Amino acid sequence: MAVYVDNMNAKADVPNGAKVVRGVWCHMTADTSEELLVMADKIGMRRSWVQYPGTWKEHFDVTLSKRKLAVSAGALEVSMRDGVIASRQRWEAAHPEASRGLIARLTIHDEAQILDPSTPT
Image (cartoon, rainbow, N blue to C red):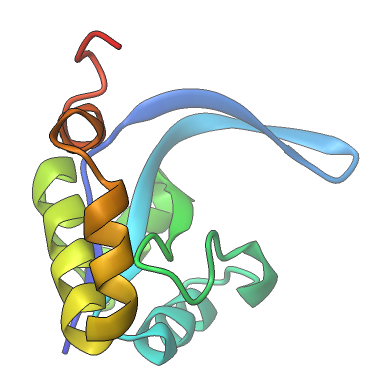
């Protein structure tokens, strides 16, 4: 079991209550929800910041400084593409009934856009 951080490196201004956090952002995922939440605790993130809880897209958006802390705490570095593929595979393995509907809805074009956002729509 493991926690992963990708290399998305997206520049963004993210609202956080009354302030805006400016930074370069990546994703943090894990093999299980519990592992993801434990790592979030270790690196000082609020559990309430989790994105898409309980789905194959469950993750935290992390700044480069939080990414570095996660790696120091044992997270594995992956490419954004490999992170998406691994997340889907973990979800499908854990939820075979639910994943059938996901696969049916996720067309080849949709997957191409997830793996390469520059793919034309």
